Length: 554
Image (cartoon, rainbow, N blue to C red):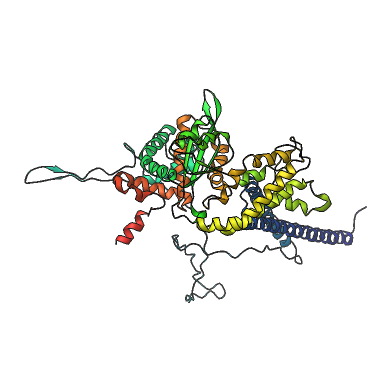
């Protein structure tokens, strides 16, 4: 049976209507998906902002919190990318209809591009005749400028230093200016390139073989051996500055000390070496001395290493309860015993969160406990003793935040007036509760950690220069923990020492709010011509860029 024309027309109409309904449904679904993705991105952004504000307000600097921020940033990255994809898909679906409005995300207003960036004008020719009437009598009314940020791939250049020879017609003597200075002997790389190689390797944890591969992709042949040779030459050239920083750090009235693992290659396998850091930072007690960090490396964690590092030091050491520091605190030590000041942040982490704990290594931060307590029936079981201990410790931290940056005398007066009563109550409470616990209880172990070393924990009430935590040292070694995932291990003991050497320079520059790469480039360009008596001008806290010096002289 043959369909009539009317039936065919009706079928076509019905098909068109079905297609329109399908387009509408698709557009509505795409719009809904884009709206949901936008909401997820907004939630991720607000969550990250809230956590950052909490970090600023409450001063939490734990490794767990740092990992949490990293995870939130990754979630925000994924949510933003997904929201943009769904927005574009919704626009395409809405374009097929006339009734569904395209979804548009609300974005923050675009900031103007920095004024120092060069501008390249690309003029789009105006029409030569009127598109309406075809007349050629056109006059310019103005112009609209649309700015687009673009990047030019890294540019390489060869600087040719031309030295002209002249001959005297009187005495026939030939004269020529001296060859230009190179940062390294027999070197052929400029200071900016050398600084980039050093910072990428030791500051951004990019091994030289990866850098060499990247340069090769850009058409520059710099072999691994060439780069390694230049790194060694730079370390030699920078050694005087390292000596000045070392002397400055070891002259501190108070040091923060810590260590972390550094795998070191040894006969086809790796051994667990150590990187040690000592940080001088007098800013918490109003000191005027600039901050600095000093790194060392060793193949093991034996006590002889800190004893050698601090052989002439006899002031305050803030650190954890590592037994290897014990020799430093001996009363008969020459030139005198180091004063031990323990870290309250370490003791705070000892208390288990879960009761009974799933593992002796299960630890918590106060923010976790407070968040869990707000969950009501769904809360994770918490030891009442652990919660009480942390609340009491946190009261001490509240006082410390208020006195941070004041003079030692002001800090000490506030501690004796406000912290001392809390400390006495904490000790009495802890000793009373400890007597009721089994020695195998995790909370008992946390209490024993403090009670056996109570004098060292309470020492902050006798000296206003002492801080409650050792966070300054922990922040300094955080980059090493991240770097291990990239460079995996040091190639030798000398390589570990070289890493510690460069980390001293880079970390000190960062502590003084100086761009390490810019500072290294300027130092490498100037250090050979700098008299020994003026080397202090190149230290990060005294450093002024050459352009700034020339501008002020002009």
